[in-house]
Length: 422
Image (cartoon, rainbow, N blue to C red; front, side, top):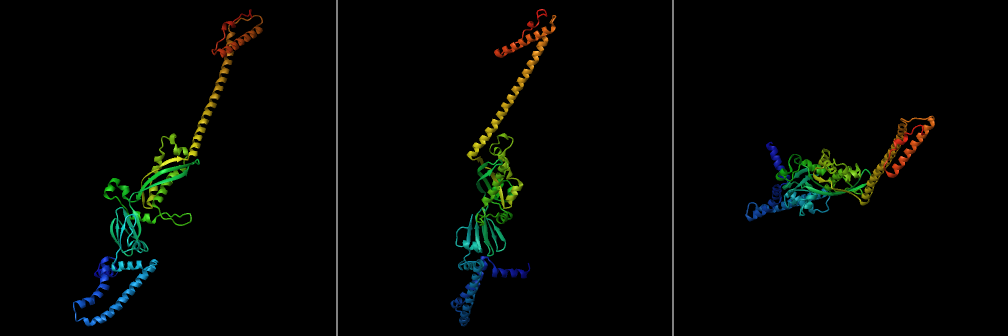
């Protein structure tokens, strides 16, 4: 930097600088010295300058009127820019900005504390001193663009800046409740859905949480703050009026979307009664979806990181539970009926098989009974008589088996009469 540039910058700070020392210097040069000069001449009896006091007072009155006119024009200009109804606030802003008098000191925690200069800093801006508590950050901006980002401690903001947003760096907690419909058309209620979140910073991805709590419990980055402030979702009410941004509601909406999607893609049995899927853990599956890269990236788009969450408690309405039990009973009844039908069909098959075996045994016994028989002269008549006798014996044996429960085989000795006896 050359000597000329340094001198130009110094003169610019003296004429337009926002710092308190430059304001006091202008106040002393423009008001204090012109007022004290004639008083000092009279006190110290500077006889050489006394003849000029009359002309000095005339010039001082003209100078004072011009200075007051300039101040009035500046106040009117500030009032017109910001569209204010009163000139009280513009006048104080001019005194603090140009003369360094009545500089507002604002204490900031989760909001601006009520003080004498709060409204001035909110509507017009600095110069002011901000005392920011730990766990908070302040974003200021000019009339056209973001200006600076301040963390905890005392900070001076210039007249070109005004407080635009106060950011809470503490870990936030939210609780939600929702309803969703399963794939089979049953409404499921989810209660006590809890989640913890905070402003995103890269240290949450690379450092253990325990070390962070000791080194810097409230980290933040300019990128996260800008995403949080300027990348907000826009919502409107039923009348089309824009609604104020709700950080908890925005994060809760993303988290509830995971649960709603999971419920809508499955049946009620898979959601609230996963007893048939022991190899699966639905709650862990839902919880893991919030830590996928795509979901984390969507939250990071609004400067937020999800630290922990729990899917909550799943249940259905009482009539639905009764219907659900009825559906279970229908499944069980249908299984019983299928088993009964299968048993009846198997019984009929066994009866047919037994009947066929009985007929075969009858034929075989008749054939065996003819072995070794000596026929007489009338062989045809003898054969017919033997078959009839054997058939009668088999029928009698079957009847006895049915009534007494113990089957008996017919006596083979009776089936060997001689042909002559026949």
